[in-house]
Length: 60
Image 1 (cartoon, rainbow, N blue to C red):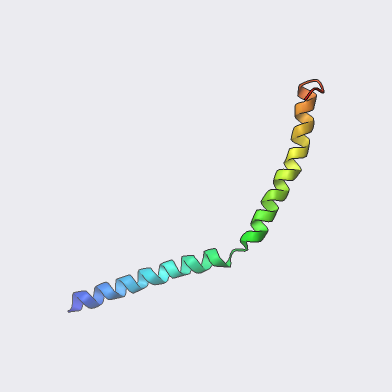
Image 2: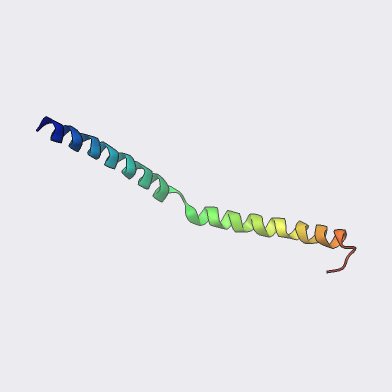
């Protein structure tokens, strides 16, 4: 009986741990992260095109 109570306590602690991880990931503002990632991709693409054009002598 004591072992059963001990196991129940361990699993409830693990459940609380995973609940904490879940609340961490749901509290992240994913929309802002995706928007900033897309902005960075666009901001990097411009100079990359200029560099490729310069490296190829101006020919696409």
